[in-house]
Length: 350
Image (cartoon, rainbow, N blue to C red; front, side):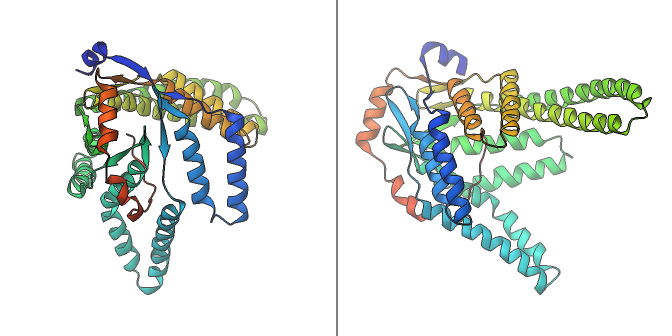
């Protein structure tokens, strides 16, 4: 359905205009002030970073913006620190107390996810109009704990259903102005993605075992301790890199599928991320960061943001401009609630 819609509408790409040298100045100041203030400046650092990335992201003649206040993020972090403190202190009161604290935190996850999405989306705008997220706590509980229960009961085989439920919940409760996003995906595709990744992992491990076994036999004949140590280190790095590539495969396939089956009014989305390109991007980013002792982190973040933007387009409906004009005229009171929400920094794929 999304393919037919995309074929009849104009695919307008998302643009990201940030550059590494400009962002480096923001990044290095953020790092310095966060260290000098022993972390207190980190909420202000986060706001500066997000505003830079959002304001440099555009669609047609409008750009995105981020409106969160550092105080709200600071409150959220203080609450998180307080929860950790309660957990630590509870161990001195009773051996059972830490488990009770963990149970309370676990039960609050659906609520925390909703509050996090409300905070993030209602502080995000495009063309001056805010996004929103519905405070649907009952569905959040079903999506997260219902999915977890299915995963446990099926001994993990039902995990794709849990992933589907979470993505559907997050997409269907998000909106732009008064218009809600609609997720039209099916859970069968999530099973396909997960089982293909498992198949690739099994084949890859078998191939790696064969290659490493043959090379290990040759190296094993050597009496050099250094050669054996280098072989062990190289084997570990190769295995970790392989599993990272499988994780990127799942991430890319799921991201493409979720966006390509999501609609906003009469507009849809087209995500064209490539698994091989993303693996290459992450690999070169990691190497650059290591070789530069961390100084190329801003360059890596800009590259990733630009690649993701370049491979996401909005298939705009014929009346898109009229729709935006009407929404701006109509306005939204959703942003008024932002000051009452704290940031708990929980992220979901969508």
